[in-house]
View 1 (cartoon, rainbow, N blue to C red):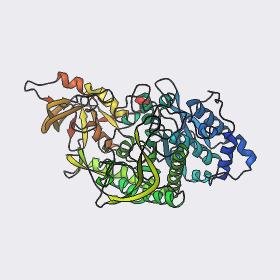
View 2 (view 1 turned 45 degrees about the vertical axis):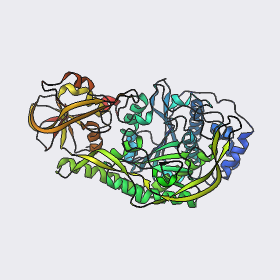
View 3 (view 1 turned 180 degrees about the vertical axis):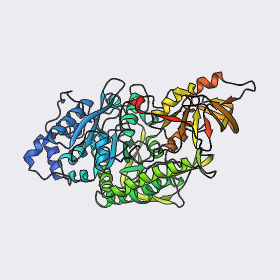
View 4 (view 1 turned 120 degrees about the vertical axis):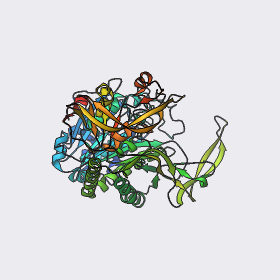
Length: 584
């Protein structure tokens, strides 16, 4: 029986024997940087003489004029590992251009494998940064936090947590640094990387389709193997001007287990918001942008519910998740500091509530499995959704702006006056289903659908091979119309289906596949496989070749994923997901 475990991850990768030279930097900034470390509330107790051996981030070494290159991150991690046996540096994959992706394991006593994390009974937390390599604050914050956890006053976090960090997820994009990127962002003056990986893919739109080697490695070797209870994803916003140093979001998809959403919105995030305000003096709130930037009273709106986005994807895996968005219009140092303190607050909360967080995700798994074993007609999940506001208006902080002329370009630009005012408006921060489908007992696929099965296995979803012929009643989706978007997105003209369900009978040969819903990742399996899901494998063209050749005489097509509504007795064998991504 599979053992369920919870981990806290902080992202970073150990590159073994790779040695990279540290670029020359402004040496005058280094003493000041070390003095700031000593003055901070997470500074270590040892004498200042020991600080001289501690690694500094490139941001610290250049007085926050520049962000870390890949080789800077590698050198920092290797130096930290030499100073502390609490730090294990490894890698979880390779980028398109061949860069090894660092993963840092912070644990006391040290550990090296997921099985050791399970045996420890500690909560596993995963922190990832730089998925968009123009949004570099999280990368620097991860480095600073690793140092504080390994050597400073945050060491006690490891009494209750195992922390995994991946500070430079989009390593290829990070190396395309230019001062022309993200021009509305305030620093660093040395420039930042790009949003996309070397394939031109947005890695924060690749969670469902898994087209990039980075996403396949992340899911296969961290999400599936370590199975962290909490995943924190660090970004920088570039939207509306507002009065917050940082905004955040939990999972936004209503198919997420409700207990996870209730815990994040009702307990965890409010507590962290108070700490950020009262202890660290940073204002924070739920992520959003003004519907009309010229009239904030029209409402504050979050982004998207679909699991192509990481925070929504993680929720469908029955795990806790927090998206962090530093405020792009603050200076670089302030953005790093706000992100650092936010992650510190998350980790401190997690350490203090590790037991209840562990119990919560175990409950979500247990209840999802129970629903799959005996699905009821009332068990329905959404496939189409719409945004809706919170029940009551909320107060949003807004900077007072003035218009002025840019002397260089002659253009009229807006400038913050430094005064923050409060407005009362609707917060469109929730989603609700507009179309639902009954949850089946399992999905069935014929042997010729093995490519689809491999895509499902890549997500860590359990799949069984049927060992004997099966004659069974099912629900099937009859496709009346296949629609392709006119405009491509991420290299895809997304597909949408119109049609209807009908009951039928199928004869499945041995070697067919059964995907049971009595498993923890049933919510993700549902979203991937439903014919009219708004972000499933159909959308990402996985069935297009089939659709092009399987039309019947009346022009309709039978969708090749059958819905088994009641459990049946049939001999099966489990197909191990590690056959796709390597042993766990």
